[in-house]
Image 1 (cartoon, rainbow over the protein chains, first blue to last red):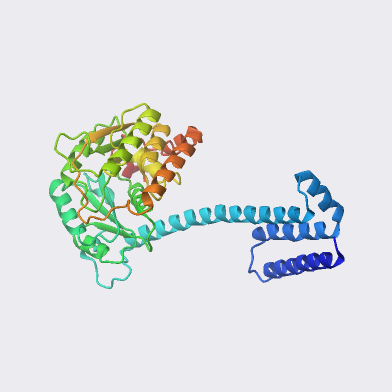
Image 2 (cartoon, rainbow over the protein chains, first blue to last red; image 1 turned 30 degrees about the vertical axis):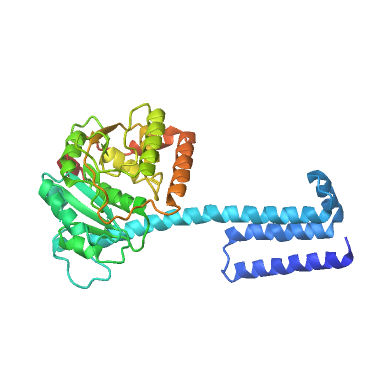
Length: 127
Length: 265
């Protein structure tokens, strides 16, 4: 791997590292989400700095060029992270639904009707 | 007020409604006429029109969701409400005027026998001449009818019917996270069966939707088919003991009258 490429890859991953840590520090990114990104940064540094590992991986997956190995793992990582986010969104969606249902039921219990100022005669006597 | 003071307080009709201001008032009136003893709950699924106001004026209890959650989630809100208020039976019904309020009595009679947990209102069992169902729709219903009947070893003629009566065990299952929030149809019947609940069909009368709009338009039938097959498949992969556990949680037996339960709390 040419030195130029190596410097580029390492500096990219170091910047990524710093940005992630800073985001966690400023509470903009939860710790639980940061690990996947930190892992990626770490893997890029490892692969850039230690060419033999990249060659070994290239042989292992049967790729011809080390570059394709990098692309493969890059894509793989993106797929994993979007799958991970899909599960997170599903969980959030489920929780959001439960909360909305509870809020609606509680609101009905309190006889508070959103968007309506007038008293509703039919429910005002209940509860 | 304490709901338990009321003797005949045991059945609630849950009607999920989304932009149904044109139909909801007459539907509530019709239910009042044909089944005066039941309570009516309208779950307004974040309608943009005056559905909740009209329903409340017509005398229904209204639970208004803060935003549109979809048919299944709106229905589930009603189940959760019914569970919280400890109703003995729940009847689910569509707001679009498709389901005949006169059939409520039939469903209630079936579920009231006590040997069954879910009564599905079937438009195909009724001797009355039914409305004409579009061919593609009919083919879909027939396909799911065959699949469901095969899996649960019991003849189900109308698996897509949203006109059902449920007792507390079934309602508790439907209030659990297993309940699908987009199209709860054929797959829920399989889930109920696997949860050990007893299902029976009863003839009901259905009309074509008054407003003409349907849940199945555009690309939705394609998604519906996909979702239904996936849902049924993963339901079969699930261990049924998980589903059974949900229906076993309650310490008050289903046969106990509402009054007895009230004394417990």
